[in-house]
Structure formats: C-alpha cells, structure tokens
Amino acid sequence: PPPHCFHPPRLSLTDGGSAWRDWARTPLWRRAVVLRAAAQQLRDHAEFLAGFLVQEVAKPAKDARSEILRSADLIDYTAEEGVRLLAQGQLLASDAFQGADRTKLCLASPVPLGVVLCIPPFNYPVNLACSKIAPALIAGNAVVLKPPSQGALSGVLMARCFQLAGLPDGLLNVVTGRGREIGDYLVEHPGVNCISFTGGNTGLAIARRAAMVPLQMELGGKDACVVCADADLDLAASAVVKGGFSYSGQRCTAVKVVLVEEPVADALVAKVCEQIAQLTVGMPEDNASIVPVVDAKSADFIEGLVRDAEGKGAQLLQEWRREDNLIWPLLLDRVTKDMRLAWEEPFGPVVPVIRIQAAEEGVAHCNESRFGLQGCVFTRDINRALALSSAMETGTVQINAAPARGPDHFPFQGMRDSGIGSQGVTNSIKMMFKTKTTVLNLPQPNYTLG
Ligand code: NAP
Image 1 (cartoon, rainbow, N blue to C red):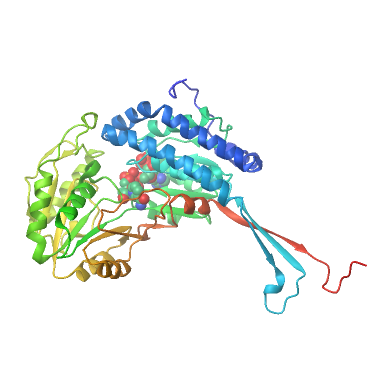
Image 2: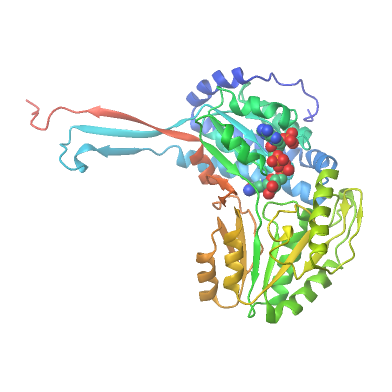
C-alpha cells in the first residue's frame, strides 16, 4: 500500500524502552536486511515523498527527489558498514600491562545504548532523520523520532517506509508536536539514552538540559569561502553561487561569508553577480533556484540582517526585493566586521562579501566566529591550500569547492558552537553503541595440564 494508508503506529517511549532488547538479540545480518528493505521502500515511494517535501518545506522538486534517493543510499551504506563494524570486537591479554601476568583475557564488544532520541531540522527532514535512524537501528537501538513541525508529514511517511519494510513494532516511534512544547519532555525523559540532534541554537539549550547521555549535536554554521588572488575565479564564483544560494541558502553548509583578497575582489564580485542574474526566483514545484524561505519569521530575520548591513555602509549589488517569504538573491559587498551579517547565519539567499588583504586574515575571521562547521579555500597553490586548511579551525575544509556534507560516509563534524560528536555513516554508527567487556580469568601461569 502507499505509505499514506496506514494506522498511526503506537507511540510511546515505553515501547522503545523494551523493544530494543529483542532487536539487539536479532542477528546483525537480519537487522541489515530490514534496513535495506526500508531503503527500497523509500525508492519505491520517492515521488510520493518528494511531493510532501515540496509542499511542507518548499524544497525544489528535483532536490526533494534527490533527498529521498540519497537517504535510501545512505541507509544501504549504513546496513553494509554496520555489519562489518559491529561484527568486530577486541581481545586483549592482561600481560601487555606493566607487571601483569597473562591471567586475564578481555573480550570487548559493541552493545546498543537503548533508546535514541532523534531530532532533525526542517531543511532535510527525511535525509537528516535517516542519517540518525539507520545507524541507531543497525547498532540495535530503538528510536524516538521528533520530526520538525514543518516537515512532520514527510517524517511520518518516511517512518512508514520502515514499517512497510518489516521493522518490528516499537523500534521506530514518531512523536510530532512543536519542539518548544514537547521538546523538554523528550530531552529530559529518563527513558532516553542518547540524543542525536540537528538544528540551530536550540541545540545549545538541549545540551544544557540533557541528562548524562551521549550527545550527537550538529548545529549551525557560518561557512567561510576564502578566495586567494591566484584562484580560478570562474570556479570560485560558481561555488559561491551554488554554495550560497541553493535552496535559498537554507543549508548548514551554505557559503555564508565570502572573504576575498582585494586584488581580485572586483573580478570575483562581477562574476558572481553575472551568475546571480541567471537564477530563477519562484515556487518549488517549478524547480526555481530561489524558493520562499521556510516562514515569515525567518524572512523577517534575514531582512533585519540586510537592513543592519545597509545602514552601516554595505553595498547591495542587487535591488532588495521581498514578497512574503520569497526573497530575491542578494550579494552584499564591502561588509565589515561591525555588521551582524559578518557573523550571523542568515539561512536565506543573502551572501556577504568581506574584502581582505591576505587569506590569513580570512582564516582569522573564520576562527573568530563562534561557529566552526566547514570552510573552503580557493587557490592554485596546493601548499598554500594545505597551510590555510590546517590553520582554519572548522570540522571540514574544502579545497577549490564549496562546503558540502556528502558523500555521506565522509566524517562530518562541527567545532565550537557547531556541534559535538561526529557524523558520517561510520562515525554515526560508532556514536550509537557502548563497549562492553567480559573478562575471562585464567588459571595462574604455573598451571600445568597435569
Ligand atoms: P531548529 O529551530 O533548531 O529546530 C531543529 C529541531 O529542533 C526541530 O525539529 C524543532 O522542532 C526542534 N526543537 C525546537 N525546540 C526544541 C526544544 N526545546 N527541544 C527539542 N527540540 C526542539 O533548527 P531549524 O530551523 O529546523 O534548522 C535550521 C538550523 O539547523 C540552522 O541553524 C542550520 O545551520 C542547522 N543545521 C545544521 C546542520 C549540521 O549538520 N550541522 C544540518 C542542517 C541544519 P519544531 O520544528 O517543532 O520547532
């Protein structure tokens, strides 16, 4: 049946609280079979689910479809990686430690955490839910999913795909509701053994409220694009436009500030403006490049950042234009450090340019930010690129390309207020188990077989 024809699953933390024990005893290969079946269900229902993403979060239709297919691929990869990784343990002999005899053998193996609370954001309600659910399930945990309010239907229907795939009841529980109303209850619930969260500053508050459970937090970013004077400016301009304006800039890894060396600043800005003029502005159903931002509050926030910069002397290179939540793409030149746009995450189609004397100044700006998600560097000099990368204090640095999260098996983590723990399939699986040791105590070394 299509995923919308279903009875609401039973939803309670108590279900997850007991269900994971049976699931943890289910052979690993069987857990992988269920995950692969869920991936197939997502593929089979890709058009249907993508339609919800278009309507709920205004995602351009082709990007919505890619999000579903990418999620299916991520689940498949997680199933495969999980069976390899979770099959492994460790055997340690005691006499490696100073002064000890070989009288003990330690067997260390992964055991699940229990119930994992997964809270994804609106911008990738399916993909960022799957990137939490699949590692949690393959490692033998149960999941409580709290989808974003905008994106909740997509989240529920995605969960239905796991049900259609044969995932036993009680393992994937969906609780919908406004985060500000039900969030504290979930985060502080004693039945929760791990929290995997992606979102904005809300995550900082969650980290303070959470009990003593492992946290996997992916928070905001202010990804800097540092352009050196020797860079391929066509490449850099394309990266600024694609990186800064795709999905109207509503991506954690969007280019959120450009720092360009003065000698090439005019040329870069001209190339970026040329490409901005080619962007289409409209509705997600029509696959417009620039679509309405998620809500009026976000649009007001973006407008506030632009007005602040304009008032302090930034140069608007396109006309400011807004109709309800639809904001036309805008590049702001000669942004300075006293402007909010130099530091805050607009999460909209608005990109500030700061002119610098040398790339090191750009890296210093990036390191001064409270965010440390990704950054990128454009130069033809590989030694310079590597030196700048090692100086840039972010979870990832891209050389000669815009910041990006994928491929989804690459490690992905933020520094400072951008997060705790690491993502990427392998690292996410590693976040979802504890190590249990069993120690075999052996006869004394002088024991003889008789
Ligand atoms: P958000 O407002 O922080 O919301 C994220 C999730 O938290 C939503 O499901 C939200 O539910 C829920 N929530 C809200 N208040 C809560 C509370 N008190 N307790 C528990 N949960 C609560 O973020 P967003 O606007 O959806 O997403 C945009 C942000 O996410 C940006 O800052 C972006 O950079 C960041 N992001 C980061 C990454 C990364 O990998 N680092 C990836 C994508 C996005 P409701 O929808 O019901 O409020």
